[in-house]
Image (cartoon, rainbow, N blue to C red; front, side, top):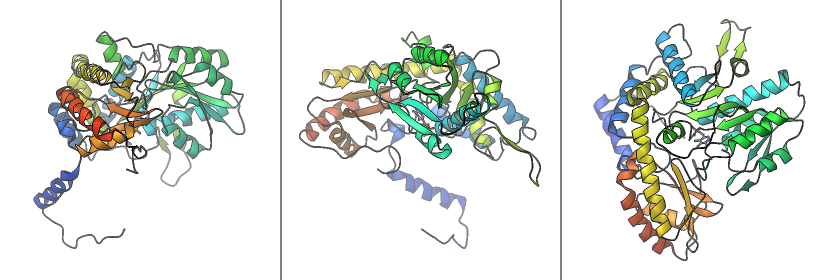
Length: 411
Ligand SMILES: *Cc1c(COP(=O)(O)O)cnc(C)c1O
């Protein structure tokens, strides 16, 4: 793995040209060929992200006293988020580097709450539906918490199964709004009832839904209660770098009260450089990610988000109708930007492989084996092209079995 750093540096023009060259093999996401990893809301948003990021690329969110600008932008971003997610008076949160980070911090806060406020000792556990994100497994692996996954019912979290798995050592239950695999919103109200009855911490993972669902509802979409409007919800994660259309490295984690948030913050008082207080996992926090989030949100406003998310909804409806016509079954009744579907005769993972040959980088589901799209506004312009390629891919894949699906490293 070692390589020698060039003895002589190179001019920026030459460096940039090399980078452009390296990117030629990347998925053509600007042309709408990616329905995973990238959210493409248009060139104007990309420009705001980049210029705002660049303005604060060297600044550090670790030092709010040095950078009151970033402190203010973070405070306002959190305020926007809490406003959209029905945060009650006194609700609080933090910006983090991403959904995994937000979930880790929510689990840490709930763990410390369980230890300090509920007096729980010994091995703790979290109960969550099979469809919840692997970031919970990571958080639990780091903190040595037991993970209890419960079966789904009609592709949704089953509150009865969750309740059956809960015991005295349960420090958190989880619902997703929506879950990544199927894009469906779990029955958060029922989970909230359960949390209230049993005195449990309910985390709603709205990483991929938190910044689209409120606007889909404003647009007239049928979005069930999923946020702090549900009384039993203690904490939420919502990613700005997904449907918030912000630059990568930006997410939010929220708590119903400042008292709950206080369990997230980590303080070391006895250190030769003084006292160190960090609200999230990070020490240094990229000013660019905070600034770009503030800028994109302020640039778009409610109307901007409603318009772009309206395009996502139309793209999803068009693709849903198209795949149904072609004999696919859509999983559940998706309301937001993710749609998953399977074919009765042709292996979804084999179709995925064929689509990849035509430049489409999308994901899969394995239960059942099918296709998965996480749509952006750009997809409204390529929905017909996708469906045409899907026709070809379905025929080409007939009789074949695709390789296993992998998200992230491994493909
Ligand atoms: C994307 C996602 C996460 C993790 O977020 P990252 O930003 O990728 O770390 C967690 N939960 C859900 C439902 C997600 O879609």
